[in-house]
Length: 99
Image (cartoon, rainbow, N blue to C red; front, side):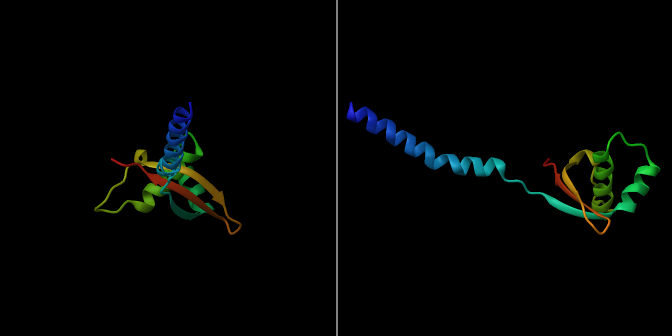
């Protein structure tokens, strides 16, 4: 009986040692930040038709990151969160989807 309990205890200890590293790998987010003024968001939203605020933010990130050599599609941008700053700036937290 003691041998079975010891084996069970050992298995649980090994499982407990590996669990935090597994969770850490899956939860790790590599988010990036873009700061834009509120009037840029309003200007873009008035120029085109968007279904929701996150589509406007995707387009803002796309416009900021795209250059002549490197074009980024709006579908490759995942807007995770945003904050409104007191100085009329919007901070957009985004992630680029891996290909």
